[in-house]
Length: 402
Image (cartoon, rainbow, N blue to C red; front, side):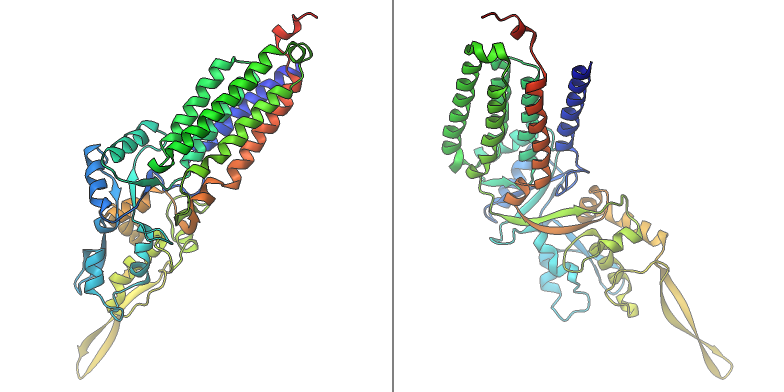
């Protein structure tokens, strides 16, 4: 009874951890439905856009394809980022910190490579494969700037552990190992494929050797010593951690760090406000400033309940009386107006897709790959597998005779 209950709990744990690998809200550094793609050269951007368009991807955000609202002394006018750089000099009051920092969202930190964000279902491996195949045919070098790769591989490894736990045969385990290898292949650049192929063949051979030993050694089967199972599980865990050797993970880019709050409100927008990074809070501040700078307002995050006013003068007999006229107030209606405005711009839709305010953090692809939280999940799985190898006996082992 206890063994059965323990087995059920382990299955539940495996399922939960597998789901966590793909949960966008639990896993940080994801851009909602968007996946960043890092290109090698600026001239590849046009080819990449044409290729992605032919594949049917429409939600693409890139540096030259965005517009920003600038006050034209009457109302906001959408201007491209390059147009703004020639329109506004550094002393122009309309030039905000948001505009100054916006290009960092579309460039890697160290080598200034272009980044575009493609809206796709990140759990759909066929989308990744179609992009890989099309970019390879058109000679477009690229990297996927997203830790999805790690989650996909670990997710398959968690299923390998399930197979180990319930004693499935070598053939099934090897097939799933091959699947994880094929998925890893999609994230390799062409220059690394030879090294990776040699590595994966070695990985495959080790699994075969260990499995052949575990099937042929009657003493291990008869006494149910879990050494081979633990050894195999350890190999399956350790070897995939060397995959980054074959991928260039040196690029550094901004990734979002979500707040605990959900939705967009004044309080959580203010908590995520950072003048030096182009997030949605800074975007809201830029929008409010462009609307109000003619009235003498400063570039500060709008305080809820504050009003923007102008003086009105009225002649009464022989003197003038001055009254303050409220132009607009920073309230819920104003925020709703801004969120509606976001629906009309590519950047606004990009920010809103994330679903909540966020701060931005510089991360290398290597640090995203080796996220400590995900290795904690792997550790939990490894420990559970280790204990299961001692607690669970297979029925066929009991029938073995000396």
